[in-house]
Amino acid sequence: MVTPSSSPPSGVLARLARLLRHRWSDGGLHQALPPEVLERLGQRVAASERRHTGQIRICVEGGLPLSYLWRGATARERAVTQFGKLRVWDTEHNNGVLIYLMLAEHAIEIVADRALARRVPPATWRSMVSHMAEAFRQGRHEDGLTQALSEVSALLVEHFPATEGVDRPNELPDAPVIPGTVD
Image (cartoon, rainbow, N blue to C red; front, top):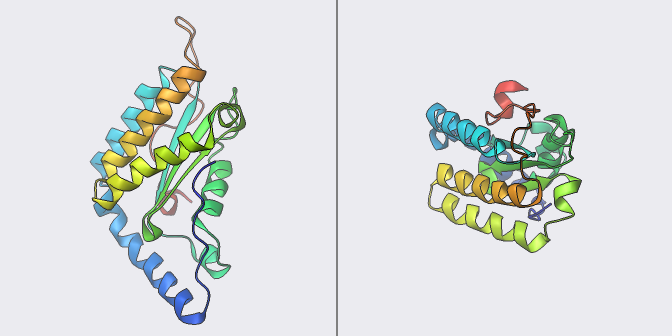
């Protein structure tokens, strides 16, 4: 659910430039989100999930894999693939959310499972992405992801609050995912 990614460039030079940008961005990933930031984000996800029945995953990539670049795929396509691969769709209440960031194209995608997507208007998701984009433009990746996590958490608390005294299993890992390191 959310931002329409721009379509990939056409033409040989544009495709080559895109390929180089994606390969170059892979190296900047650990600078934008060092291990201590990833650890803090994972802790924030865990704290958030104690307040509602949803599951949140954060997925960050420097650039698209070569197979995606070769066929001209968008960041949205990759986010939806990761939503499935990370099993965000497979939660008990169908209220998982993937927050996806791709540095090479400054792409932000939020993919919400059907139970939450039905309750939240598209304008809310677009506003959330807009807040993230502003932080990322300023190089504040942790702040942008923390803001998104906070806003997603508020939606989940509103629509799927935790029931006091009811134990819920943690259905998905809390740590952010960097696909090149776990694929």
